Length: 218
Image (tube, rainbow, N blue to C red; front, top):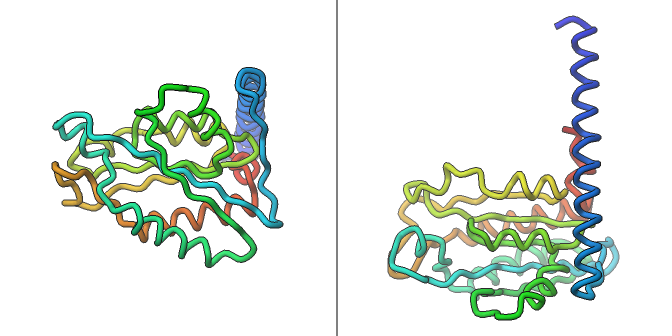
């Protein structure tokens, strides 16, 4: 490739980045304006002093006996998963954190779901419509960790919500369950040490650069 073509390619990449930033910025501005006006919400910002990292684990109920439904139910005992997450976060100095779990299927008031989601820094959940709560999150951060059942369940061929997350400026991680981790009567077991490590890594990213768009150039 000659220097002229190379320069043109770099210019094209630059235009794509600026367009992406403009669209993302405009969307987030409109979205946040709507949330502020209709749900009386306030943003919180991550700072390196006394930061409070807020983590939400979305829970799914087993609504049918089909593998499609039950394979996206978290089978792990919550206290064990949360224990691993706490140990991982305690390894990071000068932060405090909150971990909440939410099963929105039993919540009748949508505004309550929005209020809880809005100031979450890291959203975790199995692949599904619930991950769209990222659109209610704060624009000055955040991170999304999307969980997938083992490969034979057929979900891993899907793109997931990674593009949505990155478009909004969020960090994104995809975790696929190990083989033979699904049990029809319980759901899918996710290796808690891998999840805890992903949360720790994402927290460090958020502390260094709170938005994905500022840390990537293409």
